[in-house]
Length: 411
Ligand SMILES: Cc1ncc(COP(=O)(O)O)c(C=O)c1O
Image 1 (cartoon, rainbow, N blue to C red):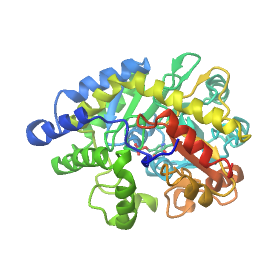
Image 2: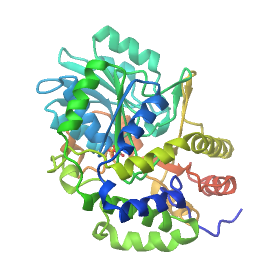
Image 3: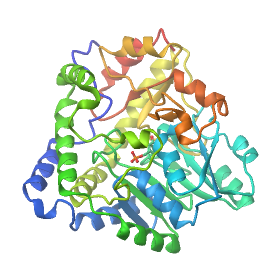
């Protein structure tokens, strides 16, 4: 099937009705930042994950930072985490005063190599942070066993994996705590946003105190987030996206809408006003999308299945999912020989994702996040060979076939 349209990597999780709700909040400034949707969203999120407590924040990274504080993790402590990850994850650990200890990933699942994690444990190790990369579940039985043997706190990075399961239970309910993101490229979008969940009442109490100490976002920032959600909903329409993407690539970092990561964060530095809450208007938009999560996940699973089958014809193996795992692909990862050529080949049909372009995505240099060059060779290799394909609600089965076919010569 020829695509007369170009798919965006993001978008496709919001609806015109969401945009209408966004506009209503923009028109009624009184409930833009504070209001009842926050508590309602937190209750619904906790229920969806099957835990007792959930606290919203301005971004997933802020939630992780709050969590480390809630577990008393700070100076002298080590946090084990996989590479590749995003620079803001390493930042949250370093801002808390602790040291990130990078563990290589497995090439088949792109999740943490637990054998190597065990070898990197020292008397200072306090936390094992497991990232369900691209929505592929980490084998949680093995994680919990390792953590029990070494008395480590388990934090799940569920930023890519909202709705994924292990042994039939939602990810985020296995560790001592977990954090999620509703940043614009994730399974549901509030432009920026984060959530932390836990079943531990003591941790919850400390998180509540951290949330209460966080600043409310300025009304002007919330308004810009809503405006961005609406503008992106429009500009990522497949029929418009060839033009809007062209414009976006020309304007680059000069574009006036708020960016997910500040230039200080890209350098590993802590920006001003980092500790912030999520606004009421964003919570209302998240809640609407959370209520549509099931069809969203069903769609992503169906599209991922098409990619898997079509790519299998070119000899590509699907990402390895543990026997008890049910993935929820925020994007579908594919290993290619020549990434630049693959991006060009797919470009008439879709913008191809390039997470991860570095062992610490977006960092000015991996060293800015405490990474030592050469310490995770598989992650370094992945950072030059991975592309990822959209799975969102605007991707139709015919699109998925065409995109997979365009990559056949590169995998
Ligand atoms: C694996 C992973 N963890 C955490 C984050 C941070 O989430 P947020 O942007 O909500 O702070 C990201 C950001 O993309 C990510 O890719």
